Length: 122
Image 1: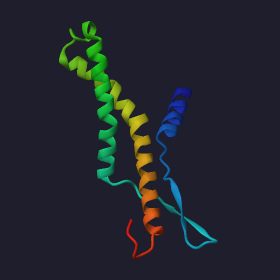
Image 2: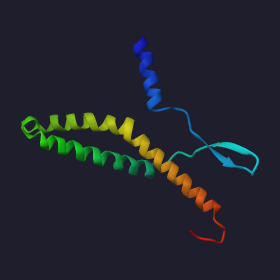
Image 3: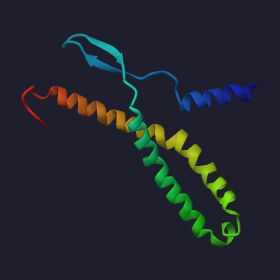
Image 4: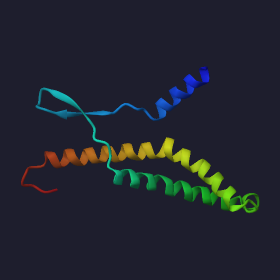
């Protein structure tokens, strides 16, 4: 039972289910909390590709360098071992960080364009 509690705490730490809130300026004195919009499916697709591609490249390089060991393995076993490492690494470590950076960047761009004069272009 302790392992289940520990596992749920680890999952909650790695992938929190709560929505992050960002402050939005209502006026100069008051601030209101509004939920941040989720990234679009296109942003998520690009973030996933940007995360998976380097991991697969690194994994294939490692497998090529360990030639005598993995060269004798059947293709399905090489693919299984590669995806068994790449997918959890991407899902739990890399993709959330890439999405966080993209959300911060999009918020920065929105704030910068909102701060510009109505007739001024960036």
